[in-house]
Image (cartoon, rainbow, N blue to C red; front, side):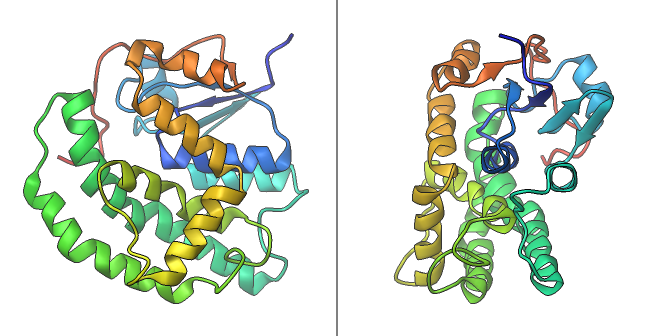
Length: 252
């Protein structure tokens, strides 16, 4: 069996990787996965991903970094089925939600929570900054969830009855928050909690979240096997450098 023509570098612990993999499922794109752990890329990885971040998309002579760029490339090269709404107005709104998810939401749930509580101690062998975590819980999370509650639908997904780019961009980081003890309070944010439940149970993120949990509970050396166990094809070449390294924009 020949390898798929696309290689995706990054493991599903990353919300950004799950976002791209969900889009690939919707569009029927087969990819070979190099499931490197964040902050462990080798020198070649630093060359193709200058910020040392995942995911990276490699297809022929095309190498792309950043999940939003990759998602746009996929949508433009494989237009059906579209992961964007039909109208220009709603497409613009969907891209805004993607931007908010990639920046503000991940800054709170990713960098200030998951990175501090899980990544720093386990991967970087550093102590978490408790002040950052407590401020995120007391200030940043309520502010962020309050805003998201205002854009949530009463039923279905963000732009109709089929999940798309906006849903796949916004939902993944909530799993990372959950594994470090932060849940969406359905009493305080009922529409947000309802939407999240639907995305996590009715879309490709259901399986992808299961894979992510398996990664989080598996030793680093055994993690590539997790992808194979869940039916994914492994890339022929791994960019795992075998040691932890910060990227140039990693927080302290």
